[in-house]
Length: 68
Image (cartoon, rainbow, N blue to C red):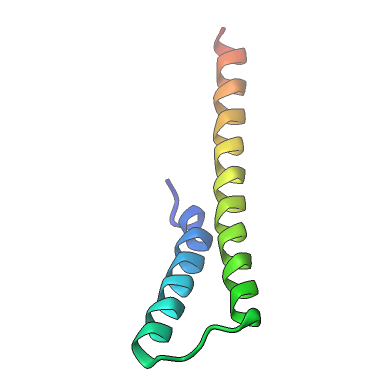
């Protein structure tokens, strides 16, 4: 797997976990804007995973059709 395929899931997960950890350590209250940001990061991570799975499945389908 290429490193490029892991950038978006890793970055969004790291930012989300870092944000939550800093808020717990410093005691900063999480407001509605922060919740929307975390929702966006979760959706971004899930979306990039779905795109990767679809791309992989399509490549395997093309390989199956050309060899079968």
